[in-house]
Length: 191
Image 1 (cartoon, helix red, strand yellow):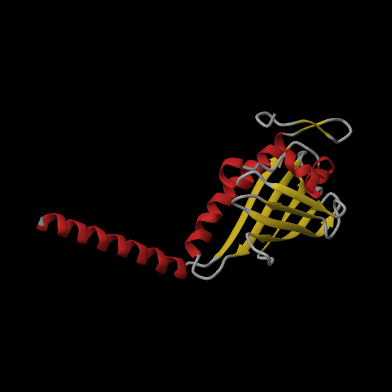
Image 2 (cartoon, helix red, strand yellow; image 1 turned 135 degrees about the vertical axis):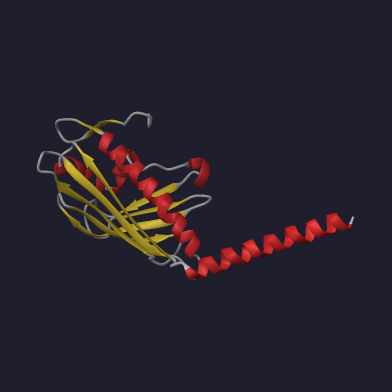
């Protein structure tokens, strides 16, 4: 009985120390995420720009996991490729809004975001750079702030968002575009 009590006290003590370590680490790490992902594409800047500057086109290449986040409801407002064009989503486990703050034809878009918040707490861009040998380098950057004490979560978000953005840019790269510059069919696996 004494051995069981000691093991139980040792286990509880170790658990409390682990929680304390995680809380202290959360306050010591910066509560900021910053992600940059690059992907070369065979598509031209002119073919890709309509796909990134119009939120109506994002469903063709930006993935969403219904199992993790729940089925989302999307509201898109404003004219594509202009300041104020916005994409709002809500689901059981996620909510947010992206709003274009700058759009330059065949160069890219810049946006602010309210991610899991009512206030803007993120900003980013998706830019298109012609590659000398042909094609385009797509660069997606995003950064934002979380509440104080969430540094560990911000650190984990960097990894998760980098992987997510890389996956989305891979889908964008794989879109088949017809001679008119329109997406002709969904990329493999999204049908």
